[in-house]
Amino acid sequence: MPTPTKVPPRPIALLPNALTLANAGLGLLAISKAVAALARGADQQLFEHHLETACWLIFIAGFLDAIDGTVARVTGAFSDLGAQLDSLADAVTFGIAPAIVAKVLLEHEGLSHPRIHFIAAAAFALMAILRLARFNAEGDDDHLSFRGLPTPAAAGTLVATILMFLSLGGGIETDTGGPTPLGRGLEILPIGWRDALTDYLLLPTILLLLPTLGLLMVSRVGYPHLSSWLGKVQSRRVLVPMVFGALGLYLAPVLVLFLIGPCYVGWGLWQSWRGDRGGTGETGGREAA
Image (cartoon, rainbow, N blue to C red; front, side):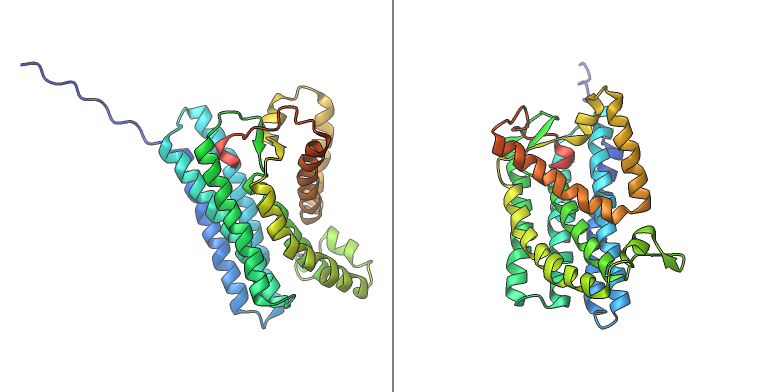
C-alpha cells in the first residue's frame, strides 16, 4: 500500500512578522511611557522626557511598518497571518498609542474638560481601527496609492505636532548639555511669543487634529504611497531635495517632521479638491494601511 504523500508545512514568515511584532511592541512601550509621564506630571522635566520618548517610539515603529512590507515582498513571505498581524499592530501603534499620548498632554495642560479630551482621542483611535478594518475587507493589491489617510501618516502628523509643542516649551531641545540647532533658533523668540504659540495655537491644534485626522483616515481622499513612488522616480532632480531633507532631519528633526505632516495631509486634500485623482483613489499596500 503506497504511503500517503505528506504536504510540507508552509514556512513561517519569520522576519516580516518579527518586524511587525516589534512595531506593536514599540506601540505598547509608547503607551507605557505616556502613562509614566502622567504619573510624573508634577515634575515638568520628567513629564516632557517621557512624552518625548513616547513620540519617538511611534516614529521608530513607523519605520519598521514601512519596511516590513518590503521585506515580505522581497522574501515572498506574504501570508494571511502577516496581514492580520500587521493591521492589529497598526491599530495599537498608530491608533491607540498616539491618541493616549495626545490625551495625556491635553490633560496635563488642562486645555478643556477631560470628557472633551476623551471624545477627541477616542475619535482618532476608533477611526484608525475602522480604517484598518475597511482595508482588510476591501483588500487591494495596488501599491501606488491609498484611499484615506494612512494610519502611520495620521499618527506621525499628530505626534510631530506634540513634539513641536514640547520643543517650543524648551524642555527637549538639548543635546549633551547644550541647546540643539533648533533650540538655539527658538531662543531668539521671546518667552511670551513661545508661550502664546504653545498655549493658544499648538495645544488647540492638537485637540482639533484628533477628530480631523480620524475623519481623513476613513475618507475616500486619495494619498500617494511615498515609498513606491520614490522607487519608481527616475529623475535626478528628486535626489537633491531628498539630500537636503535628510540634512534637515539631522539638524532639526522635530521641525522637519512637523512640516512634512501638514504637507502630506494637504497634498491629498488639494488633489481631491482639484478633482484630479490621477491614480491616487485606490488603497495601497498593506504595510502602511
